[in-house]
Image 1 (cartoon, rainbow, N blue to C red):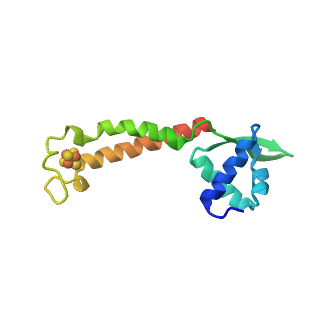
Image 2 (image 1 turned 90 degrees about the vertical axis):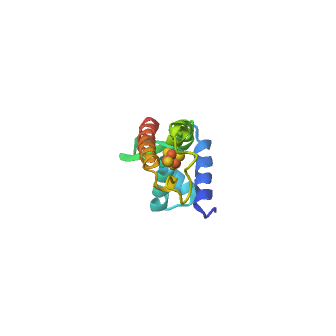
Image 3 (image 1 turned 90 degrees about the horizontal axis):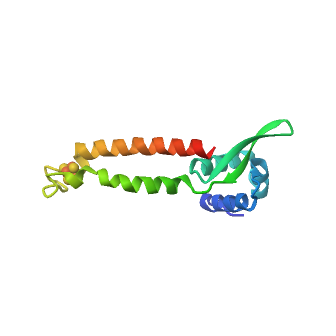
Amino acid sequence: MPRNSDEVEKAAMETIKEHKEGVLQSELWKMMGLDSREGSRLVLRLAKKGLIKREQVIVNGRRTYRLFVTEKPIESKLLNISLSSILDIPCTTCPHIDECGLGGYYEPSTCPLIELWLKKEVKLASIRKKQLMQQAE
Ligand code: SF4
């Protein structure tokens, strides 16, 4: 039985992939030898990473989730999108780029333009992730 979380996640993904019609989360926990607490955390981690989508179903009168592997993980989609944002980095058009460096008057760690750019990128990444999570549900 795999112990570290990466191995557990990998094993869970393999198990879910084997079930084209999806797998009930409680079945996954049983197959993986996990209790409901560990199983819930695992499923939430995989869903948060965009690796699986959860479809709500009623089984024996109880609400549960059927799990499916997503076509393309959200993290990969985010990576594709975020690389293009590098074009907007203020340094590419900054008149002080030749004077900028550690310990100088212009320094990336204290640059307000970099701070603004980073805040904007973090906000955009968060919005994109939420949109992709909603599409995956
Ligand atoms: S870190 Fe700031 S000052 Fe330095 S090159 Fe980039 S935008 Fe210009």
